Image 1 (cartoon, helix red, strand yellow):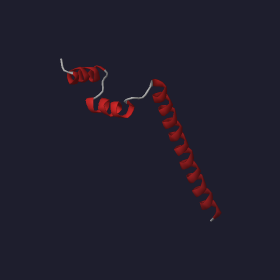
Image 2: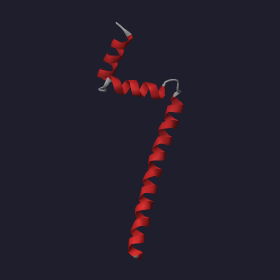
Image 3: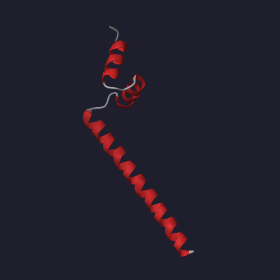
Length: 68
């Protein structure tokens, strides 16, 4: 069985398409588990901070409207 066939079987058994697996592999290849966990934490924090900035901009715009 070829390496690619094993990958296809693995991906299907996990309910993901092969392209998704390839994308994950490209992103995480060579990383240790702790590095992947830290990357995920940073991505979550970045997302949270982006939401806070969006909320602050919305609040600022609302205050500007009230002042007019």
